[in-house]
Length: 326
Image 1 (tube, rainbow, N blue to C red):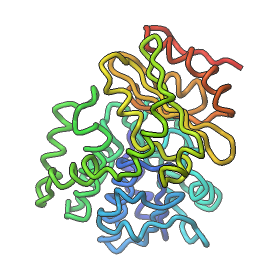
Image 2 (tube, helix red, strand yellow):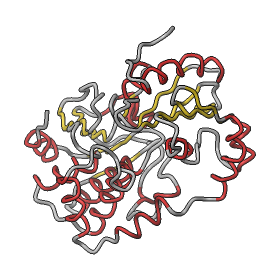
Image 3 (cartoon, helix red, strand yellow):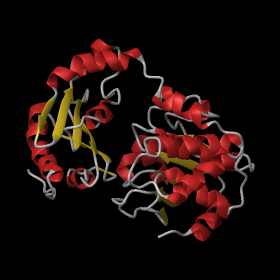
Image 4 (cartoon, helix red, strand yellow):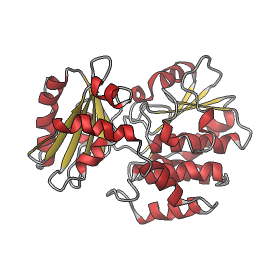
């Protein structure tokens, strides 16, 4: 349910606003965070933007990315806005602090798996990105689309649709992109920054990991161990966009990368080609996402995680439905 009137009233009542997004943020998470935060700050509203771990390096070109907090040493907000997260657990430690301290929570999202948390719902499952929902919210507030607002929002829209190539892209999505380019935003520059500036560390990670690649029943799978990341010069948990690489193979319908984390858990990054749906698998495992891109974190070790998850993905790749296994 979309309730812009209630959200606008909450903004008007707030003495301080905290905006957060999900841990391990992508372009849509940071784009919506900065697009909304920059728009509200320009109106003289007291706003803090935060995400566990801060802004990833590839998105630090966005305006005011340096103002995003990675931790919250103190809380002085009474309104919490959670962006691009299907459940409250996804907004990490900064979100947990906000939930404990703020009297009102706005839930802005576009995941069909959203659990409906918070006091005010701005959840639009048909939207191609959370940035699309932010765009409509700012329109309801009659706020201008300055460069500082439009560039992050367009970046989120571009990255979450893989350059307007996902199945949820509609004519309305492209119209929003055109409006966001209006202030003089270069679509080419955004694509170059987000898709065409791959660090050599990503390729070194692929070199370490591709020997683990398997292809069974339409599912391409690979695993990343902690030591693979260290050898490539990356922090454990990074995947070098390997899930998208696996999905691009002609033979795969579904792709998954099992990422071993430092605490022994296993983070799953799943991708699919229409009509296969990996969101149902993610939800069954306690995660969430979209039909073509989803994720979850489960108990390790890697081999146990593979034995639990791969049968679910085989079913998703071949027209079945996901059911959990203990």
